[in-house]
Image (cartoon, rainbow, N blue to C red; front, top):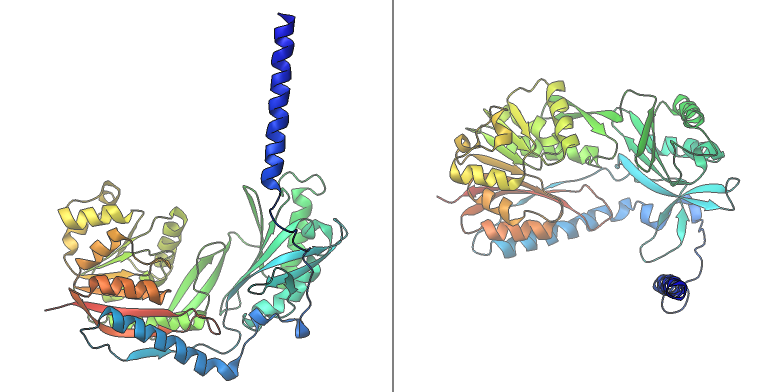
Length: 426
């Protein structure tokens, strides 16, 4: 019996050694070892990826618009394409949000800390002192934050810094960590909050600290900033939340909202909106319709949309946390999903009115495409001309394009925001 127990113990030990060796082999990269990363300091403190080129702006935008036109013409080859309405951006200081990684030089806790970006195809971090694409507020805050994260209380194991600003100069600074802010051995949460309070006093910005499963907000009641957008003579107020999606280019966002509002003026009946997010378009379009049903899967986004509707005194909208499959079923069968019944919403009574969609880069999934085909008019805003052309091609047998717009949300990149209005063929 003793020999059997000793043999079993030896087998277990051998298996543990074999497993450890196997894990080691899996972790070891194949091929030559990559050289260590080196902090690069570009001339003027601006990496190439963050530079503006106003002298090239018109040419770059013209190329993007031409690509959009070609994609849509191929999708609707048997119908004429309306003239593209082009909406330009400011040449500099157009981005209202930015994210920078933090590079540490030396050993913790006495290392120096640097805000960095990465160039395409280059592994090395590039220090950034100024961000010409970013709002003036972001550029004002950057040196203050850079100084604030040098002491270890705010800087130890910090991994990135994110800025969220508005046209009203409201600002939020989010600091993310690899250390546990709640149970850190080196510094208590109270010490971090005091240092964050000092940063708040210097900048006036809300400070958010993030670590694994923990979040703390200093300098405000919540993690939002207030944005004000002018849309065809209306002043709209939005709460924008840290970590949630917001349109990065506020000036172009105003033009997008104004275009969509103009495209739906004089509408009859109701509007169904998919992917409503925090209600950016919902708030702008609601006055053009009798009723609006807006759907969104994110619980936090639904709450934010309802908050923005209340702030702007809009009461003809119902926001529901409902997946597209249930919306499709309601429109097809005339039933009302259970989650909509307590909101006094009946999708089956919306008829074949108007649909607004602003989907992610992947475009409409199969279910949403089926929903779209059932509406007389579709207002489609897209951040990806390729998936927009694909979806327009699917709708081309029943719908024709009445308006096309290009919105240069992302100057000096290949990305282009676009919009189309499709109407059912007679």
